[in-house]
Image (cartoon, rainbow, N blue to C red; front, side, top):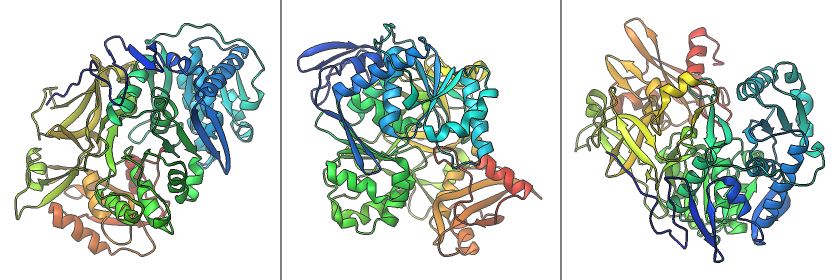
Length: 577
């Protein structure tokens, strides 16, 4: 099924029209029309708007900036970066932890045509691993500078010898003073920034996001996705080195002049109630988080009824597999705070499409498709189940955003009919240019304005259902099984940590065996209960169940489980059992 929405349509809630053929948005606020083709235009259009645009809770001290001050900070930082010797098109690594300090640098780069490379700022990884990844990204991107914090610079200084292109490591506070913004002309085809993928399925690659694709996806999110405006308030603790936090809250809301409250990611991890408290205090209306965040909030917030959350009209959920039981538990926990059942909205996106692809729109109920397990496993067909059949539950991830084209294709590239499982392909002006300095991977994944996602799924009644990764398939007795489906079943067993389960296929005596690796909660789950749960739904049982202590499973910088790493550690016997 092919789904295509034209951007030539009336804007909602007083928003402008869009013509995506040349990435041009006639934008009008306060009666003045401005042509938006680049994110430099988005920032320039903030001139003179004294309304509050961004608030930053930096561990208790609140920093407030108007939209006009956001532009002023961008101009100041752009001039200071130019004083370093930075020229249009130069790449610069950004490893800055505080949102109040990170965003002005990001905005200054976009305003002046410099190319930022957001990077993971935490030292929680082993130092060797952290330095290896940092050096690899800086080498791959060809960055000439690395901008970081005072507390980090001493740890990353050894990489100067490992990155030939790197001229200097400079801290935010020591950028040279300067006046006068460089008069660079930025176009829609220019590179906006390079977003390195999380590396959950392969080595991280730099996705080249142009100014045109960034503007197109920002419009798709804020106008088509959530119908946002100046009366809304976003609340986010998401890390800004990851696309959901960076684009979804640090960049896109500037297009619709939607104010955003930023919390430190580490503050949410330490105290999940800080997220809900900020929504309560600032009367937030828009917020997004991965599945695990809803689980943490339901488990660790002491008094769920102490917050008024009734004004939130969009609780988005994405970036990792969505567990319906997790969202049900969150909604039930906070029902007394004004959250209705079915409110949390699953969405789908990927860095190669800039960010967002499909949204469950605000107010649209969450959709669960109950399909026949036999037809799904044997024929790749998502047929609605009838009474007495084994059932698999698939979560609807929303409908394509305006200007986004979604197809499901077969092995030969043919477009498949509804309810047929295949690879998800995304097209439209939001699709990124390709991978930086990876021509072979670019040719394989990108082409004709489309990107092959590597994800499996199907479309039913216009709704996208994502079932797994093509490369993660476990083949047992000639049938293909999605690890995500198995992991979701295991997560139901008491004692298993939700979102901390990995299902892998490993060589066995008679072919491939199913191995389940799971972290345990406060109580140790029964291994036979795990086997029964999987066999009862799929007709197969794990040949081995490996239980690990909390925090043992390897994850990417964005929190995604690394199945390939788990499989290798299982095979070489290095899992911490």
